Length: 446
Ligand SMILES: C[S@@+](CC[C@H](N)C(=O)[O-])C[C@H]1O[C@@H](n2cnc3c(N)ncnc32)[C@H](O)[C@@H]1O
Image (cartoon, rainbow, N blue to C red):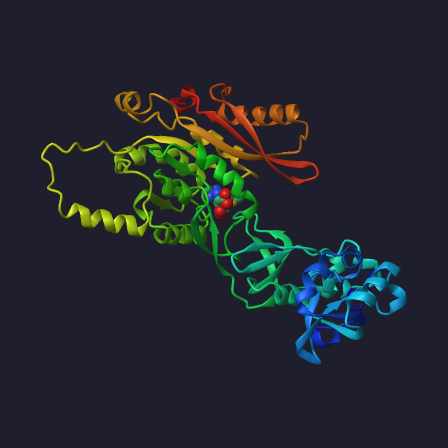
């Protein structure tokens, strides 16, 4: 016993979608029961097998012809012959009669996937687009060529069916080679690409058509931020709009955050403000190579204030300010030393970050011996993202190490680790190689 509640196939539609076409009337039977009996009726074995069980359809409803009287229990049968003998016997003795009922289903009833399937020609139904990624209010999909004739309809269905979506775009294959953001076309909704996206308790605002953002990296962002100590200074060479920088700053870290894309740098500054960490995030907009070469020297010349605990909520800050009004400053209050040492370099530009590693050669060569001994008793860690086409872990390790060591001009030995971030294609993996910068590289004066 089963009812066909799938939407009607309506192939050949053009945008805008006419929702009224999606209707289905299913004649069924309903059994009348007094409300007091419903508990035991629902539990009885013959009824359990025969009561309607469609998602989002209530199986017990008021009787439209007598709203205050008996209830109607909807059955998954359109005539008595469809009902098992046991159910019929039960209904004959327990119910106050059977009545015909018409189940009306419409566009609002079916899911986006069901409606999308119903507008496609048969040969495209299997493998039809399901699901989408969300960035702020934008739903983005990646339509295969054969689905492009239906793109506006698909866009409208996604928009209709997901109240949190205001804009639907199709990601085009071309990615901006330098700044890594992808081109997109509007399928449905508002042409508004400035999004507000939340990750790791931070609020990110950015223009999705101008800057790089990938929500699939959130676990990688979290993984590295977790490694940082709150007292650390982080140098984020390819910072984007701040998915490493801002959570790190909220944790207490001070961050030198750089991105060559002026739009990324603009939104990075805005996001530092919005997340109330602008005092510990210094934004720059320059090539990663010069940033790596200058960052340590700049920091010594202009250090960050001492670590003062993780970022507090606005309420906590106000409370503390109120308390401090009654506390007399102590003459012997100790001034904590400022932060002038970079503990971690983050380099998330997997396509080419390894190419930038030679910039580390000699970064400390123009610091005084005294400064270096005092500040860099332990060398900074480098976390460099990269791609490899070697899929076997051992081969991937050999390939990545070879390229890294070639660029550094030195073997990587101390605190070395390799982390598989994600598979980006069947024969392409993204890794993060972490290692302590060899002192000989940083002091290289050649
Ligand atoms: C893959 S994205 C990573 C952004 C961010 N760290 C994240 O995890 O989402 C790489 C970033 O590097 C920036 N970029 C590209 N070339 C650069 C360069 N030569 N120097 C500095 N930044 C660069 C791009 O604008 C982009 O924002």
